[in-house]
Length: 358
Ligand SMILES: [Mn+2]
Image 1 (cartoon, rainbow, N blue to C red):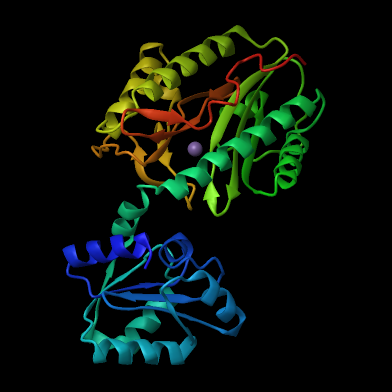
Image 2 (image 1 turned 90 degrees about the horizontal axis):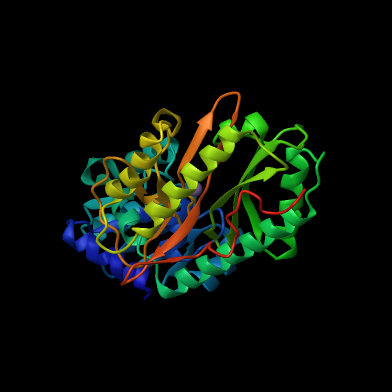
């Protein structure tokens, strides 16, 4: 039995839950190990059953450690589960609201009737997943390192006159060379840098542009996340000024990451620095988020979040200032919370406005 299932059963006991049904998404992967696209995990206090169709029978036998694999889907699967619940007096079931479609939920309801009480367990699944095991931490460090290498290779080959999309393609090529997969790549240049999640376009990057690159890869299922902003040639003075404010806000907030630190307080450190410099209204998003199998996980480093950081959590620290018509700056690192403080897993990626000469 895996640690994930052990931890899940503890949470189930604490909340009077008899079974968990997972139909997709990162939760199914985390608790069952299954990386395919179709299958249902049923986890009770005594048994783990994975139901899938013939396309995934062999794969799930290999991946779902401690699970009994049954070739069941559709109506037959629903009948089996209903029967199973009746036989084992299963009444309270956690489902995963995030991955269960409305149609699936309705068919569950029809099959099980009112005898079963379905509750959304997503919050509890997230609580288990937010503390990474040593194995997960290694994968995340490797992912961050690979992404940083692909980014630096991209910056070295980038030329004035290339479009944002061409730069994004360069990055994707380097990620493929490292045997990983691009999760997302945002290249925002000039006034486009004022859009935090700009979709790259044909805009050609020229002298005098500020360029923000937010990049993430997926390695062994886990996400990396890092953002750097740099100048191409000489940029307007206000952008240099903003860069230094964001850099200080990012540095000062990141230095305070550690066990027992309140997520909302970390957001405040960065927000106060940006507000005191007169740019508070231009920092619209929260300071950061956790990540893992999903790019956004709990906890979030946001204003009113009173959650405390614990060793084994990973969080991004990514303040930004965005000014319409002028451009913007965002700087982001991913940090692992340790027993004594933090390890910055993206620190190898240089953080300099003049990252290279163009
Ligand atoms: Mn991020």
